[in-house]
Image 1 (cartoon, helix red, strand yellow):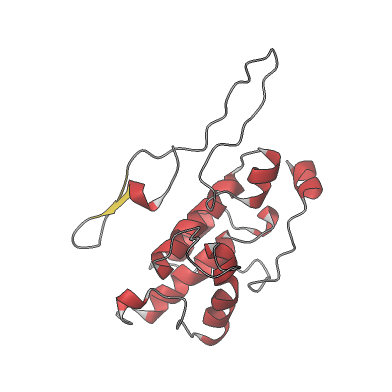
Image 2 (spheres, helix red, strand yellow; image 1 turned 90 degrees about the vertical axis):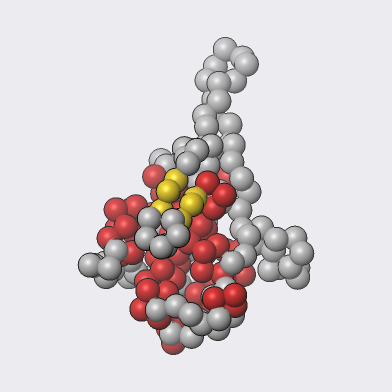
Length: 181
């Protein structure tokens, strides 16, 4: 089971989010005598460190949630092979657009054109900021899920920057990540 938009439903008033069939990527027992983990999940939602180490952490879930937020913002799928070479990955395609949106408040090119600019800019900014923080390459630089929830709530504009701008998170280093786990 995985958190993907097909498992999310929003009521008609767009006030309540319903989640079904939700769970973490499964850990599987190896057929041999030792226990191991096997990466299971949908490409595009998997955090880089999970894809390479097979170690599932809270920050892996945060990354996946960030991809879902990007899908909601952009109307694009996490992996779209019909896009030009280099733009197939939603996260990679969105990085420069996230920077521009957060630095200059320009959402053109990032936000789903089907919205026809029919959104509240402060809420779109908050959602974009949360998505950008969640999909950082370095898991240690991603916020905790509680921080994301507070930042997305209307009552709090929690700081998700962690001292970083979009694109300043270091490139993923599996050896360093494995040591942190």
